[in-house]
Amino acid sequence: MSKAVDNVSFDLAPGESLGLVGESGSGKTTTARCLLRAIAPTAGEVWFRLPDGRTVDLAQLTDRELKPVRQHAQMVFQDPFSSLNPRMSVRDIVGEPLVIHGLATGADLDDRVSEVLARVGLQPEHRARYPHAFSGGQRQRSGIARALIMRPSLIVCDEATSALDGSVQAQVLDLLKELQREFRLTYLFVAHNLDGGEIFAIGWR
Image 1 (cartoon, one colour):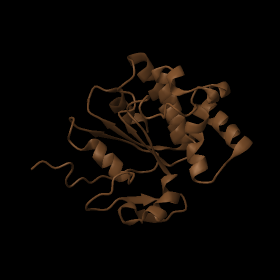
Image 2 (cartoon, one colour):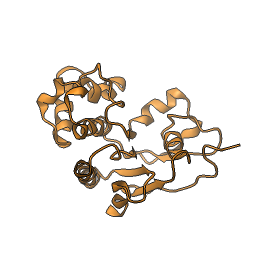
Image 3 (tube, one colour):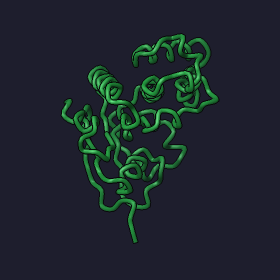
């Protein structure tokens, strides 16, 4: 009987980029989602160091205990269209994590959304637009902004450029590189293609 994942073990240091590569169906995305506790692992440990220096096993935390931890680990998804709610404006999509964690509302929320949109190469007026009004690259920049707005220490990129054209892939990878340097982000890149742009990003540090 096939297994989603089995005996997976790796360390990821602060500010480091790591590639998780394998063929389709090998369990890459399952591993990534277990790492973020989007899926509860059936066994094993997922140790995560918080900004205050404490280390917690995400696999053992309750949903209530997980909520404050989630702001420190975010994901950028493969499909920049299906991962964005078509009924929500970019302002609401990007700002939703702040609302969920009770960190900003009203004008403060608008200012923080505008700030992070500018940082990923979008304009403040883009806040009022909906995902269908953007190109694929702009939608993925919106997804990156949603992940970045919480100022996480870890971002998992689940084949984050595979659905984009070649030139746009390079632009998005350059953006991720700049963000890593500026915010000392740690990246886990999930990819199925050894020739993919994500793999060339591993040697950034």
